[in-house]
Amino acid sequence: MKFFIKLMLFCTFLIPQINTTAYAQSTIDTVIERGVLRVGFSTFVPWAMQDKNGEYIGFEIDVAKKLAQDLGVELQLIPTNWDGIIPALLAKKFDVIIGGMGSTTKRNLTVNFTIPYDYVYMDIVANKETANHIKSPEDVNKKETIITVRNGSSAAYYVKTRYPNATVRTFNDEAPALQEVLLGRANVFISARPLPTLEIAKNPDKLFRPFEITDYREPIGFAVRKGDFDTLNVFDNWIYNAHSLGWLKERSDYWFMSTKWQDQLLQK
Image 1 (cartoon, rainbow, N blue to C red):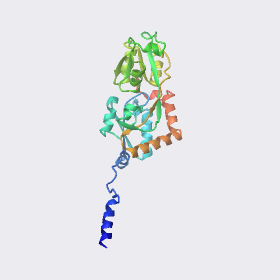
Image 2: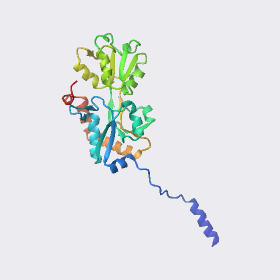
Image 3: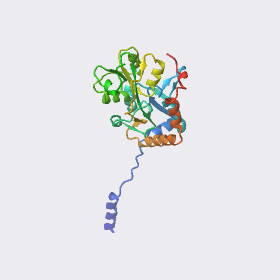
Image 4: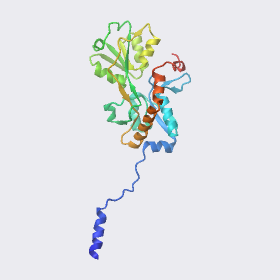
């Protein structure tokens, strides 16, 4: 009898103990409990901009609003400088980045990305007087060519890899970067579509497109903190459904393929 009691006690040590510790609460659980989705973003035309009333509008804003609506929560938009947006996410200043962020390998080492909800394509605009000699990418890739880009953007990454010999000037926003080209202090400005096209339409006497950029297509995803697979799963499925229903394409076409929204902006 004693032998069987000892055997039973021994066997209890071999049975894996059930972990009664609760799983760490995911961000999406916190969002539902809080009743508010906090979205970090930075302004990029036409991803996110301010209208005549100071309200944010744009493709990203539509996406954030629709996501919050489908989750059944309120939306809190948190504008953040682009060069500090990932550190702000990691510091839990907000729940997710929805800001036209390309899911590059370097960024993926710091944050996790959803499946793509859109793609970024590059475009170029040049000064008619200072860059009338530029006809091809080879003409840009020279030390005497001055390129302006937004710091930390997909364009900055593209310029660094595609035009390593050019002189590059970075700015914290597109407006001063474009201004340098308009004033003739730089030759070309490169950014995501459709901003260069819009600027050419506004300044046809000063700006032109020297050639089409056809060698860049970058997937865009929501960025979340690493290890939060529950939140990633919810966002992935939302994007999948928004694609399947045609909602993302409809919104993308409106903001990127038309100019119907321009009269909502404060004219400078």
